[in-house]
Image 1 (tube, rainbow, N blue to C red):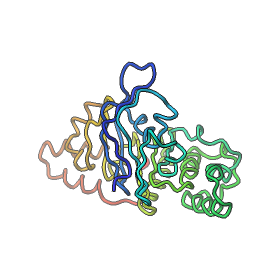
Image 2: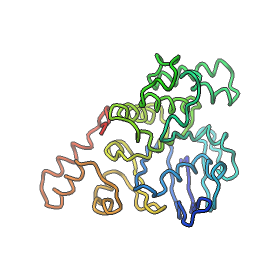
Image 3: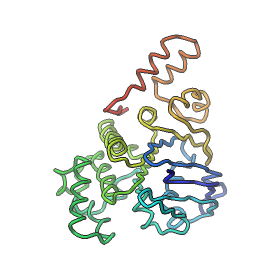
Image 4: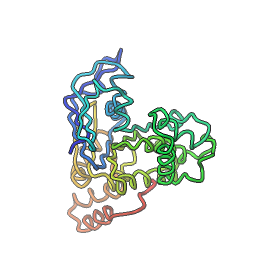
Length: 286
């Protein structure tokens, strides 16, 4: 089942001359871990904002094509142009790059409870969801903390937790570790990987950390100039390393080495490749 379907999507911001998205066609499958990479200005963040209706409802511009979101529990389909953001947000949760722009309550617990209260859920269910989300994020002992006192990694985990408590079917994260140190990045990546693997949540992750995506993602979409330049599994994209470098997408150093050795027909290249793709419970924090 496809939980998101993008059909011939074009979008141009107001007063902009060029389209930020220029003919996007994409399916996202239920339970998939999809990575999105590309140079700055390629349209990655704009695409993410269309998944839960922020574009075109809150951010307006010239919008053509359609984005369809399917609730995997009911099978009901929603056209994002016709469905309000609050409704879409219960299916597609969006986490932005800067957690400080999403956190505004006085305690961790209040932050997680905020969206649930606005959904009008019963008190008992709100408490259950708070406990569940804090436990998954490893923030149980921080429930009474003032959010600005948390580390950067903990703040980003809190932003994810607040969205997670709404129990979305799809979690979209737009460069969630861009401002974090290696330890913070590792913690967030581990959490996201666990949500996909253990909770079955569909994950769409925009990241400059190609190392993590090439190890963990089921499929990677490479964007350039508002279009999908190429897509495929990590192993498939390794064969296009020269093409990716040309548009400014850098592969992990180990895969760069593999590509060079492969071009020289050295047997060591296959060993490097298999070592890189060995399953790991601890994604790299580079």
